[in-house]
Amino acid sequence: MPQDNASYDDAETGDAAGWHATVLTLYPDMFPGPLGTSLAGRAMVKGLWSLDAVQIRDFAEGKHRNVDDTPAGGGAGMVLRPDVLARAIDHTTLEGDTRPRILLSPRGKPLTQKKVRQLKDAGGAVLLCGRFEGVDQRVIDGRDLEEISIGDYILSGGELGAMVLLDAVVRLLPGVMGKEASGEDESFESGLLEYPHYTRPSVWEDRPIPDILSSGHHGNIAKWRHQQAVALTGERRPDLYEAWAKTRKKP
Ligand code: SAH
Image (cartoon, rainbow, N blue to C red; front, side, top):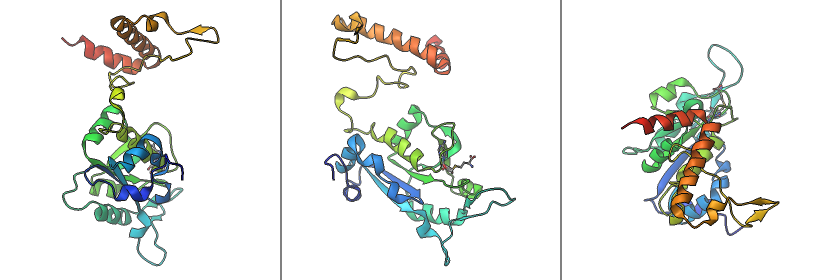
């Protein structure tokens, strides 16, 4: 196994005080997947966060252990059953578990950096991954699931959405990123997209690094970066720019 790869077993014996994710899925083998590598994987080994991937099918009953059935009212595809999902949720969230219960869903509120920060502060999350046509509405209502979308496109299942959400949260946990990379400067944190980056060589394919960055004048560099961030956001994301400009107008 590559050294960089965190083992899932290590995570389960990790520090219980860390941020804890429970993922309910029909494909637990997908986890931790990419989250077992690099920054998130090292943080898992350190016990800064942990992950249980729970097989939804274990909560199905009957000879065939069906987790899904045909849609009421007709139509294509299959729908995940509310009773099976509720048993899985109830079994994994014991009394006093205040972690937010989230359903990954294209109908949900779009995931934002602000939401990621809130989830980081919540101590963990229970993430339900849909499949097929989705899940029966009654379990969303009956278990108070918060629907979150990772973007305006349709995935084949919630698992990759859960990984996206977890990756975004885990990198913000204390001790995961170095001090120097607190993340505060990054895109969305200030309401703006980030300024462009440069590194060595100082000239590459006839393209020099902007002079200002070699000036050593920190004040001017900060000003330049801010101007770049504002211009870039205006060009690429008028929606973010408008929102940012509005907050600046307030006295
Ligand atoms: N019929 C549904 C799509 C089902 S896709 C609809 O039209 O809204 C199957 C599952 O993949 C969903 O239940 C959800 O858990 C997951 N999924 C798909 N797209 C997603 C997205 N953009 N964000 C988060 N989860 C998504």
